[in-house]
Image (cartoon, rainbow, N blue to C red; front, side):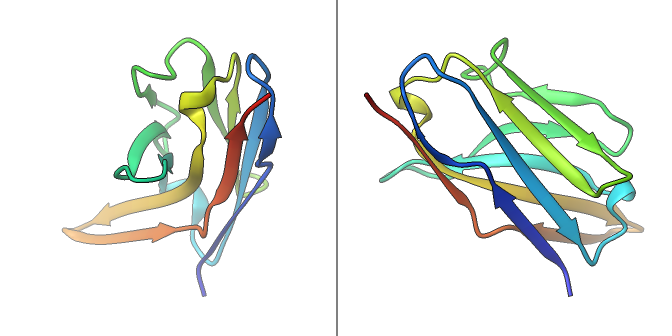
Length: 119
């Protein structure tokens, strides 16, 4: 049974920082590309950051330069450090695991963690 469990969300003041964590189980974690996505009210889910199994990272323009995605394969964990948060960062943040082998895709989502930026 695959589980992705996010934690670390909450209420943060503008300009503050947050570290989101995602604990994965039931998958061969080190083989998966991992990502963070977010969905704000009334908007589509969007990519925030990804990290491949090899450690290559990508970021959405909206968070580039103030966010860092990282992974710990020994702990089956992926993290998202976000700094200089603003109201536009308010959303539910989802962890994603993705792997394609021989054309067969395995893709999993966590249940999300709410991040609210407000004074």
